Length: 172
Image (cartoon, helix red, strand yellow):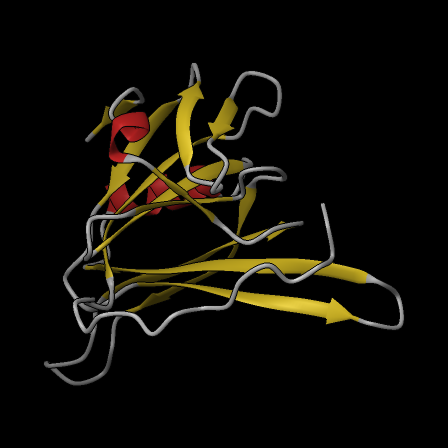
């Protein structure tokens, strides 16, 4: 890759909505899943035997963030990708799903409120690194779970086309 700047970032339109709609999680398989991207970096094809399971939550309760780490002294760049997901109500089914997540490497696909799909843990997988169960104290407090799935990647998350996403096996 050339280190010469070839373009800037134009001012975008005011047509974006924050937040995520759904998250799809599958078992990470470094050799069984391949992603193909076009010249812009958009993932346009995926070959995978993984089943991706849908994780649903209430609007405006969960997020995806990505933080870059850059060292001029060492010549390194890496990106920490974090999905913070909030689920209402302590219940056995959610508990059991979280216990399974804690034991495996995953691929995560984040669907934004804008209808875009972003791949988290594409190269190295993502892991459950934090989980909190809470009953709350007052009647209006949250009763449920908050989990943090984290990936450490050599590049920023890549967008996946809706056509490529449509080829995946997705289960509710």
